[in-house]
Structure formats: C-alpha cells, structure tokens
Length: 340
Ligand SMILES: O=C(CO)[C@H](O)[C@H](O)COP(=O)(O)O
Image (cartoon, rainbow, N blue to C red):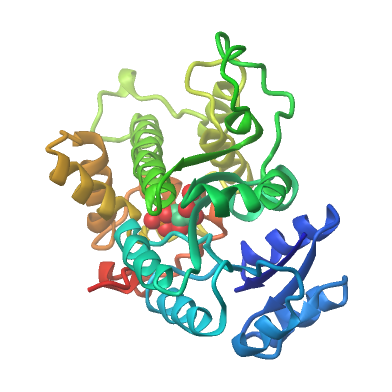
C-alpha cells in the first residue's frame, strides 16, 4: 500500500522503515533534508514540500501519516494537508495530540469529506524492530482501509502467551497489537491514559530505588545501614518477580551503564499527556491519586533532583530517546495543545 509520512524524527523515520521493509511504498517529507535523504537512499520517494506530497501519491484514496510533536506544528500541517487533499482521502495523526484537538480537526475535515484518524502510537525508539502498539480512533471506513498499514506496524502476536478466555473474541486485532478504540479522538484518549499510567509506574520504581539507595544514609543507625547494589537488585527483579516489566528492564540497563546515573539531570520533563489525564480524571470525578502525585513530582523535580528522578530520566531516555539536559528541558503544557 502507498502512504505518505510527514515528520521523520525518532518515530516517523522508523515507521517508514518498518513499512518499506514489509512491502509498502512511502512518500516522505521533513524539514530536515538529511532525514529525507537517508530514507530516499533506501527506497522512499521524497516530497520537496507538504504541497508536493499530494502530487506523488498515486493510490486512491490518498493517505498521509503525520508524525510530529503535538501542538501547533501538527495543527498547521493537518490544516495544510486538508487544503490539498480531496473527499475520501485520509489524514492520520500518529503523534501524541490532545484528543479534543482531534475532534475539532475531524469536524473541519469532514466538511470536505476527508477522513481523520488519530493513532496513539507506543513503541518509541524500539518500534522499528519490536513493532508499535497502536490505539486508533476514527470512522470504520478509514480505519478498515488502513488495516494493512496497522497490521505491518503492529508487533504481532510474537511469543506472548495467549490470554485465557480470549478464544471466543472474534476481533483479533488487539492480540496483534492494535485496536480500533472508537470514534475520532478515542485513540489518543486511550494513549493519553496509557501515558498517565506510565507516569505512575515510573514514579513507583523511582521511589522504590530511592528508598533502597537511602538505606545507606548516615542519618540511620549504623547496624541498620545497608550499602545495597541497585544494579543487581534491578537485574534480579527482572527475573520472575512480580514487578518485572519493560520499564524495569530499561532501569536495569541504565544502572548497569552507570550505577549513579551521572549522565541524567533528574530534571524530568513532560509532554502534556500526564496533565491531560488528570484533566480527564477531574472531568469524570475519578480519583487519580497516584497519577496526580507522579505528575506533580515531575514539576517538583525541576527545582531539585532526587536519585529517583534520575531513574525517571533514565527510563524516558530508554523508551523515547528523550534527552533532559537541564532546566531548559522543562516544558509548558500549552505548547502541546493546538486548540487553546
Ligand atoms: O508516548 C511516549 C511514551 O509512551 C513518549 O515517549 C512521551 O514523550 C512520553 O511522555 P512524557 O514526555 O510526558 O514523559
């Protein structure tokens, strides 16, 4: 199948590579010409501008996957594409957009008959080889049309044992690693909550390792002090323990590389989804104690840093390639919403 991809950063470039490795053809565009050239050298077709994309897409309906940071850049790209595409064509936002922005965009595009599909895409810098877990929102016609793309990008069943009692569930897409969550916005809503949970899980590990490290504090009684080997504790917990997980794998790897995590500032940034999860919890009057605390701890981390916050930084670097160099790494929530 033919598809265009706009935004060839950490995720977009690898999405193109995974698609092309599996027989799809891609038209690619990015402001960074090196990112475009790298992909052209392996078979992609370059578009010289967003306007140029539509000309290179020969299949009908045309499909354009936007993989850019949430906020104004995604908004303006979707608007430009909306002006260029025609009825029946499909715009996919695979970034981490705010779901209420999706709903607004879809309404505007629907006036021209253009479909808008929101895809919460999890897999970070590892997705090229492991595949991407996708949470998809949009109308059925468009989502079904894109199924070959989703099937290729998804991890597939792999060697994960089948969940008991799923035998009678006819839709197997969840087992392949993607779901059609519901109408437009629902894909990004599910991904938003996924990221809210991510904050909570990360914070739990961070606090646990901080307590382990603090057990050597000179404030404690001499016979109650332990100089624990955190690198080995992370490693042993990966093997058969109740708290094993991919986030723990990343933590173990970071600690094995540098037990004191000197390369991480502990100044923990956020890209908006944790905040929106709390907003949703407030709208629904759902108590979200752990997720709220994890979010506020990131804010506090920008004033001073615990070892646990270096653990958080290490995990964010591990799954998303996020580099937090110092105070400038903090972000503003407004940057990521297009609608306000
Ligand atoms: O979606 C992701 C992982 O699932 C991205 O890496 C996202 O940037 C993580 O959220 P935050 O930047 O707020 O820590």
